[in-house]
Amino acid sequence: MAFKLVDKVLSFMGFEEEVVEEEEKRARDEIVEEQPWQRKKEKDRGAVLSLHAQRQVRVVVVEPRAFDEVQGIADNLKNRRPVIVNLEQAEPDLAKRIVDFISGATYALNGSLQKVGSGIFLFVPNNMDIASDLKDPQKEKGIFTWMRS
Image (cartoon, rainbow, N blue to C red; front, side, top):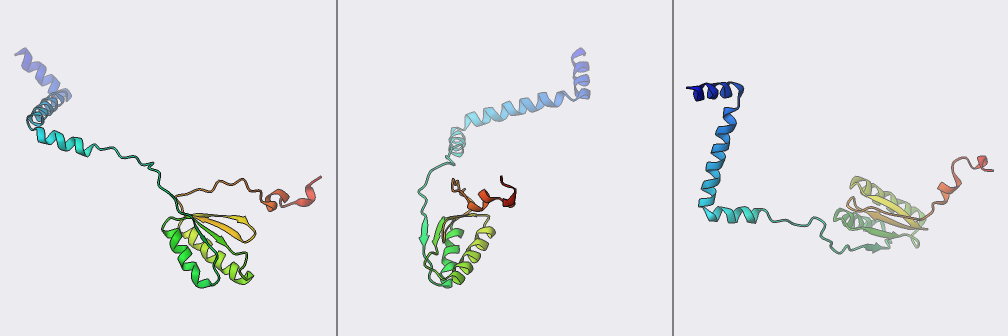
């Protein structure tokens, strides 16, 4: 009778359910042990794959001569390929239009760009970062050049 009183107190406090859940869990574990084919499936589901598998990155280098070629450049960015655009030989108006279009596409894809040289730009998709040690002459001059001593 004392055992029933303790059970009632434990059930009132909410401890009895845990004991029942543990017993049910043990019963389920015994059933799983009786069926070895289920253990094999659980092992197969636990396969670990490396997320940092290195794959070769292909960099696309283009020298567009017409504005019609920019869609192909944007498609390369959509396919997560970095693109180097050489506009040294292009006319200034055409070069500006090309850079504007590809910059917009890069922005829409959350990518980034870097001016590498005079008329040479690097556009990368959002899965890559640009690490650069190039010095920007505008940044060195500063906004208020008259404040320099």
